Length: 117
Image 1 (cartoon, rainbow, N blue to C red):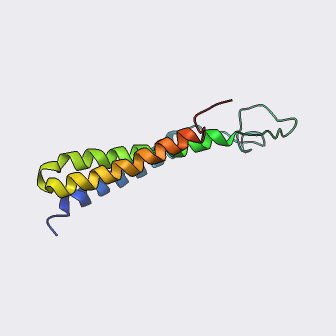
Image 2: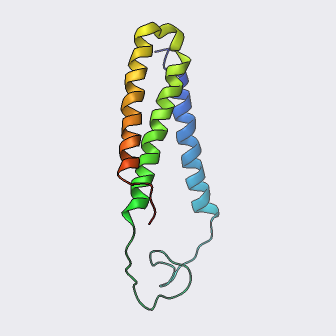
Image 3: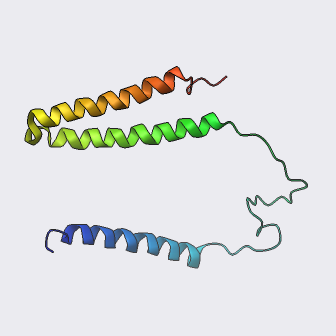
């Protein structure tokens, strides 16, 4: 149990901080109400019509690729910290992992995901 003490303290501190900020914003924040302010996406101006438009899917694909490669980069940093302990087996495993990651990157470039035409 003593191994988890630091983790428990960290999670408790994060929960108390987040809960405290939500409670403070509720107690100290401005109280605005009314028909216009209670609408979603309010800006203080009464909407005259609802506009529907097309959104490009490429934005969401690029965002998903960013998250994917960002998490893989975090994995690479954690591997670099324990590189000495893993030896040759860990090095070969990371080469296979990087090969899969780079093949995914080259596939997305080949498919034209990053072209904003």
